[in-house]
Structures are given as C-alpha cells and as structure tokens.
Image 1 (tube, rainbow, N blue to C red):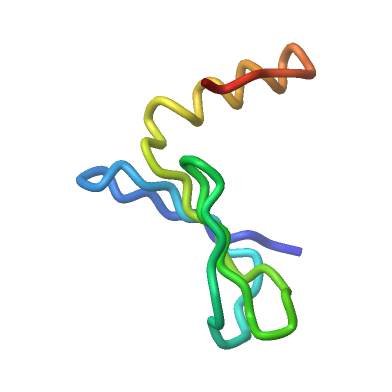
Image 2 (image 1 turned 90 degrees about the vertical axis):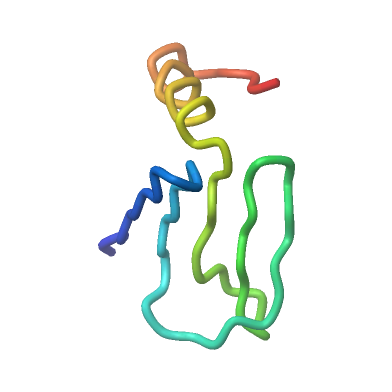
Length: 70
C-alpha cells in the first residue's frame, strides 16, 4: 500500500492519505492529530497539526522505540 504525504508549510500541517477512495463522514481529534473516517469507520487520511514540532519527536521516538509527545 502506498501512502500520499503532503506538507503545508504555511499551516504547518502534515497530511497522510491512507485511502484514495471513500467519502469523508467524520473526524476525530486526538490532540494535534486529526483522523478522518468514512461512514464505515475506515480511516481515509490524518492530519498532524504543528508538524514541524511533532514529526521530529516522532522520528526520535522511532529510534528509541518509544516517545511521549507533550
């Protein structure tokens, strides 16, 4: 499966598209991460807000196998 990743520098939002097909039904916000779902609960894409701060911490966490993002 291929993922499409887009970064909006002005808004500082990283978008990861996980499904090319599907109609957006609802979204759930988990702090700085918003996951968008179709009517069946399948994730379509997620947005990482404040990406320039969050993503580097995620990468560090991958190296350590764990991370806590405040």
